[in-house]
Image 1 (tube, rainbow, N blue to C red):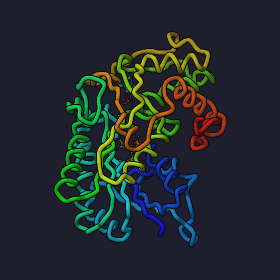
Image 2 (cartoon, helix red, strand yellow):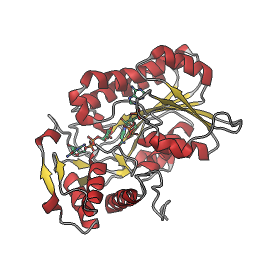
Image 3 (cartoon, rainbow, N blue to C red):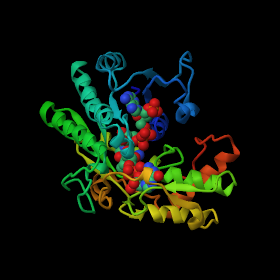
Length: 341
Ligand code: NDP
Ligand code: GDR
């Protein structure tokens, strides 16, 4: 029997890679998309299938996590076996400007979806996109049993959704799990997250289209992995015998400054000539160093990160440089040696 999956946030970075993965595994994939005045489906354009074709296995539905009745109606109609909740306002900096909206889409959005599953009386498995931002000021390395101390409205909203997922698992016996994912990047990363902002700027400066890159705090320490590997980890969590939460991370630390230097060096440029600071990109608070310990996922799911550090920087800078040459079509973004040997 064909398995059926529903992805909220299918138009985002992770949603696009997850849709690719599930289609390759033979799933029928349903995705929620938001109504927008401009096209917001560029990351999944290459996966588009004509809904009139009888063999179609990808279906998109207009919906928003702020609209509970729509979620219930859709779940009743689609009857998914697996739900991946990846949707929501995902920018930490923006969450300081829009804390209420962030709480609504990220925190309450997850609860609306969990309630819709109960209301529609579905027997399905649920994945919640939890985040290392929930650890906030907790000291590194962080793992599943590290106490959460979020330091942003986004981290607090994610923690609410994370706790709700645990409550629905324990209270209603649902197969509901949270993947606590550390930063994962790719050429499909949104242009305002730091890695993509840097790789895009480096490509443009190298091509003579820009002179300067304006940055905020360069001292932040992150654990940056490669998004296509992380969606495989999400899928494995839902195939496990028992529902349990897992950290996915590389375990390697890199500062924002390290990333900037590596990106400029890869393009043969001197970063100090091109990088300037702009206070607008500073945040009211920053978390402590974010470095994950994913040994539980390694032991129980056989998952380990393969791509990180300079290799990740190179993949992103090369893709942005190539995109300048082919009209920004970033879905052609796999490095030649993918998957890594
Ligand atoms: P993106 O920002 O790329 O994608 C977010 C998705 O959510 C988009 O499809 C967006 O739609 C959709 N969305 C936003 N608000 C709503 C709403 N109100 N209703 C329905 N859909 C909405 O994020 P990523 O792909 O990077 O991340 C996926 C999830 O994982 C997010 O929840 C993020 O917070 C979380 N996460 C991400 C990590 C990372 O490093 N990437 C690490 C840990 C957690 P549209 O395209 O229309 O904007
Ligand atoms: P993060 O990622 O906050 O970890 O959230 P982001 O790339 O936004 O910032 C990383 C670090 O870089 C510093 N920084 C800047 N950040 C941005 N965006 N723009 C800048 O100009 C800039 N200059 C310096 C930041 O201050 C920070 O220290 C990401 C998101 O994907 C979340 O959804 C996810 O949950 C977490 O990762 C894990």
